[in-house]
Length: 400
Length: 142
Ligand SMILES: [Zn+2]
Image (cartoon, rainbow over all chains, first blue to last red; front, top):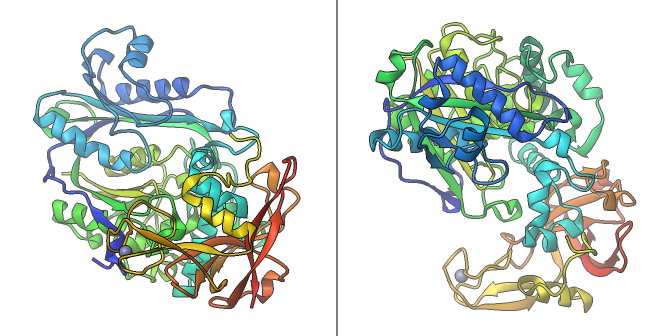
């Protein structure tokens, strides 16, 4: 493992679940800027579409996973929406961010223990609609944290764009990463969004020259280095590969999962490996479980709140040496048709929608089925790198 | 949220000594009594050795510039009067593993560079629409 400071985190012990769970249905809501919708409406629409995709009825879903915070599409909400009343196993180890990558691990254990047969993981936000005058969705929870309130916010080192622009500038210093390399990430995502009908930035092209000309909001970050704020959500349904083969969609199974943790949590000033993510701990576990290496990956997605996160996670997942990420992503390297590592092929959090990673998993599944808008030719192995800051998880999916 | 947000709550126990020190124009940081390392942010246990006893020491106020940004968009309405401003992380001379989040003042951002020697200056900080002020450790090039 190529971690420069291995004392700052660890990998969670995972049993081998390779080949034990498949994704048999995926769905997304409409994604938008402020729309007046509620998180419940957003998630319910995504869930309906995932059920349609799998060819399952609401009564077939006997397992629900959702996020440990925020809006939860739990059994009560499910029954209320669909008018059902059957027993449902529930887990708060689901949702978006890193959980959208690690939920299949928990689902594999639940399937093995016969706690459920069809498990639905869902996540959605209406943050564009709810955005408060004061902070807005992503900053809100950080503003409540007392160390941040007393040691970061008074100095204006807040919120996320400020922390991660600080990380990006340090990455530039340590490794020679350039603004144009960050721009290449933004441009690749935008090109993919332009090809993806449901992407919020579908109709807004972006060239590297336009990126260079755009306004700095927290130097070295420009507006285009930062994710959107959106209303939207997604859902995916998991079952055993045996049962998945009896359903309509082509089978996509989980090859490997890993979860990494940082001891310093959301206090990035404290993180010894300032320019790394806990993906350095997660990715080796997932690749080992899958019996695969980064060279086997056809399509890559990762939680990309800022351009620098794509650069860091590509490094931390082993696609290149630590520090080589800027050079690796330069030019058209991340583009779906000509790139060496097609990345965030739906547009990512930067240009598709800020739905916290759930749509990344939907995209990987579509890529492996051959159903994506910006389709990577003959994609057989795909990854979602999930991230929360304190944790990161790697989910490796494959077409068996 | 406290009505004086985003001023710090100088009475919150884990960081009260930091802010009390700042009011006296002293930069106060806890060090582990067992292994001698700086422990920032303050925690119940030392991250290096697990020790649970700490001694707050007065720093020289010198350090080096670890990283910085130039904020030109007010992410909070309270920051409206401040922009553009320069949040930064300073690695303290007494233990460079201690990175203090702070703000660089009185300096053209174009003059900043990695590892530039910096020194503390204590200034009252205030925010638009918030009563009162708190003396805070800000930094300038040494
Ligand atoms: Zn110690």
